Amino acid sequence: GGNVSAWADQSGTGDSNKNATQGTASQQPAYSASDAGYGGQATVSFDGSNDMMASGTWAAALAQPETAFIVGNFSGAAVNEYFSDDKDTNNNRVIFNNSGASRAAIYAGATLDSGLGLSAAKSIIAGQFNAATSKIWVSALTANASGSSGGVTTRTGITLGSSQAGSAFLNGKISEVIIYNSVLSAPDFATVMNYLGARYAITIGP
Image (cartoon, rainbow, N blue to C red; front, side, top):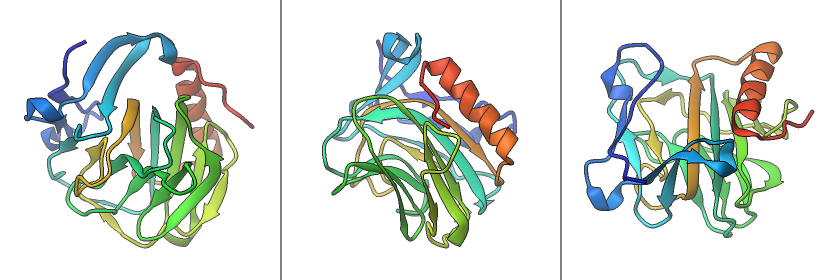
């Protein structure tokens, strides 16, 4: 029920700059230790106004390809709402709700739209950032869309709940973020997606 000033990295790399923090109390999202809508797991709620968190600059920048998973939801409004962005470069590696269409999308210079509408219902959004062969999935094992997400090549950190520039905020929740520095094999991708589905009581499509 309190506000979140720090979200600790769990990667085990020992890079403290991967911890996401927010030192300004009025911009700290709210914490729920057990959210019934997410299988009793913890969630972090962003207010859509100014809540955001950001890591430091990572010791090693992350080049494409990258596969990122985010468990969360957004308000359902037809506005840009960013789940995540790069820490230092605006609109670098973005997972967001595409404003005009209210659909899950990824962006790293070009928009790859899933074609699936988002709502207040929780989802697992996965984005493979790999230039012209990028993909996006929404609670599914088969990609909902594939094509270019743009050619931005390096991530230096992560912003949660907003764009890097603080111009588009999430009105919703984030429960888990996983980032891999590779394109996952189909079996590995299924393992992660099914783990998240079971953990947060989300049905995974074929």
